[in-house]
Length: 83
Image (cartoon, rainbow, N blue to C red; front, side, top):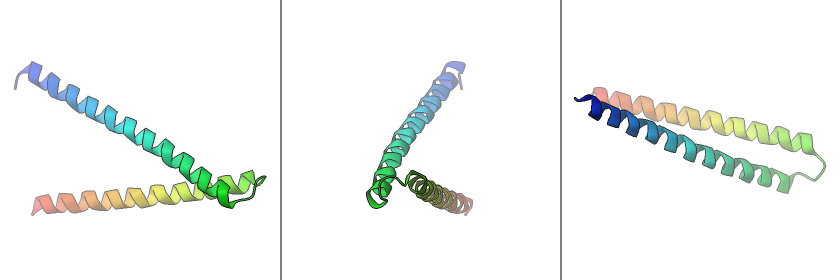
């Protein structure tokens, strides 16, 4: 493979990673605001600590769940390729 072709492929890989990261950040910010609005709707005003604590717990649980499911899917896909 020529040096020019390898450079083109690396450029495309990098641009894909940047685009994916950008959309991930946008999605995270959207979920951040949605979860905060949801919590503030059910927690009375003035209980900032409790709403932040609940928010942190929810976000942590979501992060663990999503990470677990993605890891499981990746493992299963790798096992399928081995067959």
